[in-house]
Structure formats: structure tokens, C-alpha cells
Amino acid sequence: MVRQAKAQRMLTHDQIWGALDRLAARAGLSPSGLAKRAGLDPTTFNKSKRVTADGRERWPSTESIAKALTAAESSIETFVKLIGDDVGDRRCVPLLAFAQAGATGSFDESGFPSGKGWAEIALPAAEDRHTFALEISGDALQPAYRDGDVILVSPGTAVRNGDRVVVKTRDGEVTVATLKRRTAKVLELQPLDAAQAERTMAAGDIAWIARIAWASQ
Image 1: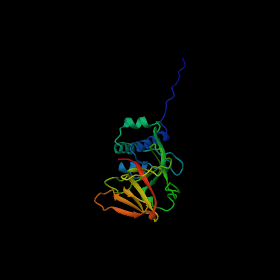
Image 2: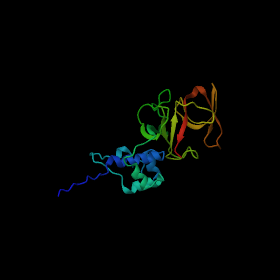
Image 3: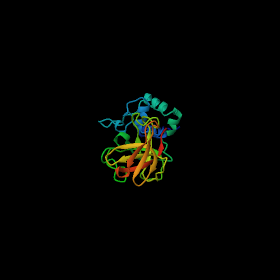
Image 4: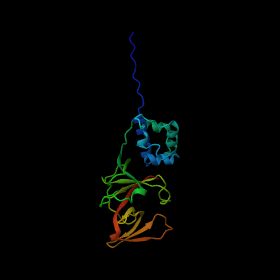
């Protein structure tokens, strides 16, 4: 009698890391943001850490996956479903740390992503093809945004009074605030911390302004 061996499907290195990437995306975080929220070193899930210097595949530990699941408020069953799954109604958009947004060369004159330093993150699909994401670090934007949160910025979407916006000045300052009023001469902004005084900027000092279309909360 001939025995027919059933081929066993083994988990691959790419499947496990892909599931972790999708887990982070479901929580509205970058891989480093998920690692930080899980209490791990921020570089734990970075792509550069997935292969050793001599080319060997490095796998995430069971402990790190467990902490990531807790941070993302997900179960092991969810993680299993994410293995080999696709991103669905999400797409990859450029991602930059908010602290680097003021650096020269990060954006072109229209406020679109440019230059080096950008990573990618899978976030809810947006119609604006120039959409990009900024990862918040520290507590400067609390209570609106926490450390590790990601905001989706849409340069191609019309900005209206009452919108939360990202504003970059010609001297490189990057501000997140609520737009109160915009005229041909000035921009009136309300800081996210309502206790702070309103701020008025001259229109000529603004490099670009873009609406925040979505944020992980």
C-alpha cells in the first residue's frame, strides 16, 4: 500500500512579520509605534531588525507578539487570521515621524512628501493620492494625540474652518491646531490645548496647510 504524505503548510518568516505589520495598521500605528505602546524597544518590529547582518532571518519572540496583541487590544485568534491576510480597504502611504516634519527637504513646495527618511504604513484608503502619515512622539499634542498615534494628512482635501490641520511655516515650524479662520492675509489657529491662547499667522509666512483626515485613537 502506498502512503500519500500530506504536505504540511509551514508558517513563513514573511507571513509572521506581515501579520505584525497588519496588526499595527489595524491599531492605526506604525510597527515602531506598536512596539512602543507594547513597552518594547521602538525598533523591535522595524524592517531592519528582521534579518541579521549576515543574512539570517530573525523571528519575533512569542513574548513580543503577546505584548503587541495586548497593546493593540487584539487576540491570538485575530493574529492567526492576519497571517496571510491582505490589507483590504487599506493602502500604503508615506510615513514620517512628526519630529522630523520640519526638516528641510521632507516636503516639496506643495506640501507633498519628498526626499529621504520616509517609511510606509497601511492605513484606511483615501482618495487623495498625496496623502501621508505623521507619527506622533511625546506628549506635546496631548490630550488630542498620544505618543505613538498616527495622523493621516491630506494635502489635496479642501480645508474648512473647524478642521484640524497641520501647518508648516516657511522657516520650518510645524504646528497642529484647529483652523478658526483663514483670509488672504492671516491664518487664525486654536491650539489643541484649549487652555492656550489663539494664534494668528501672516499668510505670507505659511509654506502649506493640510487637513488631518484621520487619526488613530
